[in-house]
Length: 119
Image (cartoon, rainbow, N blue to C red; front, top):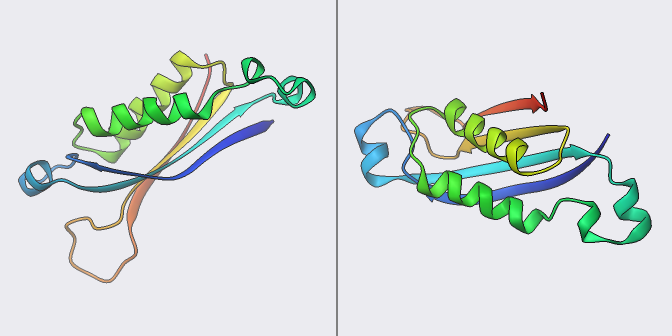
């Protein structure tokens, strides 16, 4: 299956369980993989035969920046569900990461990855 990649999308939002996360907000990194057949779009060089990644970006941005979730799992699920509802993709993978979660220790980042299929 072919895929369209949106990687390293960076947003400032107010998701989290802790009051400080909801009040101060933080950076979230999002990656999205859209699985679909891109053969016709490749042959015809026609945007109408594929998914416009600029429109997908805007959907992801609105979901991350305008909604509020306690869990990264819920945020990732919302992004995946909305993409599947709006675009003709067979499968979507969504990765959401917090580069600076409120956890003491030495780490790079925490995150979740979910994969959802149509119907």
